[in-house]
Image 1 (cartoon, rainbow, N blue to C red):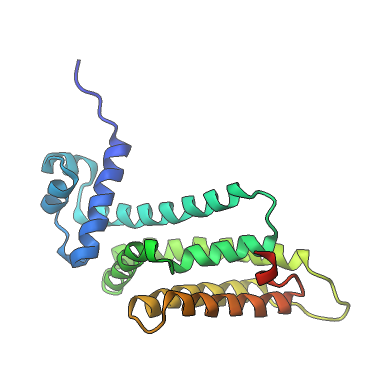
Image 2: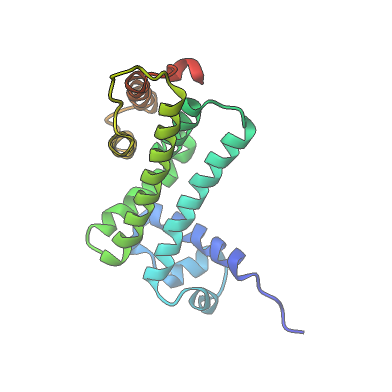
Length: 211
């Protein structure tokens, strides 16, 4: 019988190879032949999984996003009774990619973002990724607001605006840490200070106390 091939497993293996090469030399330096060699599969196997280099790069971007999402799910599953503030803090932390063990992912992500500036093919999916992150943060900010005290006559901040600001901050901190302008610790302090202010505006529990 012909050998059965797990294409999804192979695609993920190829995506990992793309990420390694993209970190080393940028997405523009990634070729299907080099990916095949790094993934230890044939060039034909890569071409059967992906019709073009752009399609391969797009899958690698989604692969990075899936890894971040899975880490967040794991953190939340470990303590299912966490407060809404703690969940928001975890989400912001994962999006910012500030930890040393996530530095490679941060470099790869920014390399893809840089390429997206001149490639609409890549820019479209990246916009979709940012939209999904924004939607997630809107939901989490709304949950934090619902957990706070309701002062009569006080208008609470708009969750859409707050989510947009938090996403921009987390994304920007990734760059500052990679460039060496901030240390991971300094960036984490900036992020947590912002969350403190957000929770004060939403009149809910201090995030440092909730962690």
